[in-house]
Length: 340
Image (tube, rainbow, N blue to C red; front, side, top):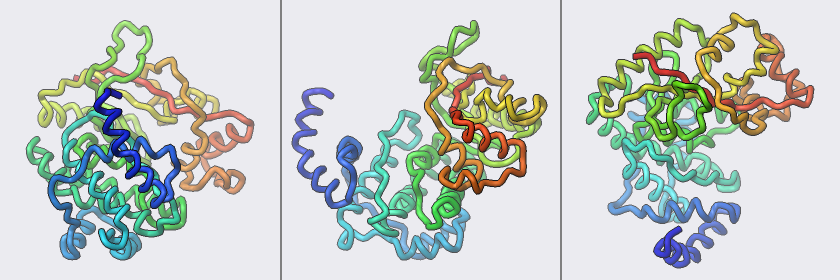
């Protein structure tokens, strides 16, 4: 932190501490709010009106249950000024960072005590910046279909939240910000993120250097056949060459539990997951224990319900048995040379 930053921090601290108390946030949220405090709105932030919201929710594929809850959880400056402060700065930050792949400081998780307005606040942030993201997409010649597909990830995240917690809202706001500033695009079976190498790739002779442009691969739910992956990689090669010719991508990376080599103990060598693993060179770092995240992704249920989880597939049985034996699943990072 520079001297100027330190001075601003001291000046902002009383207001930030007040916001933390009003919102019921932990003291650890102080730096997150300080980062957001550096992005005050330059113009009035206007939420989509009722008609605009209805059209957006249609295009985004938001469920009927979430549409009802969203309407009841519309933020209001007079009713919830502290949440409005947060919304304004999140909207402003996304608008300022349209097209940027630089990491954003994480946004705070809001406590359940704030009710529906807190659970849906970040959804209203995303709805408010849809026009900005669409403008960036058009500036790159990206089609409407690809544009709305990228923005449509919001509906899936809302569905996951409801399945996992039994109530609506968005708890993966820091993931969705990538889609809502033009960084991630669904292309075929995979999602591709404009990013750069930020890890030690290991000693392989053709390994990328830290800081090199790369496409981050993200894996949505569904079968991961070799053919669908080949098609997605080929589609991505054409897409980014056409729409981001100034960003040459020689490498693709993936950080996922799907790359954990321990899966070979439970899955057949010719299974889709193991064949996907074989595309990548793993980095040395094994990463932390990711058991709760893996269980939530696969089963859409919390790890506390481990004994009630289904065991219908070899993957389901392997995930559960591995955890029951006292072992951990890990998000492993790998890289591959992107096809020309």
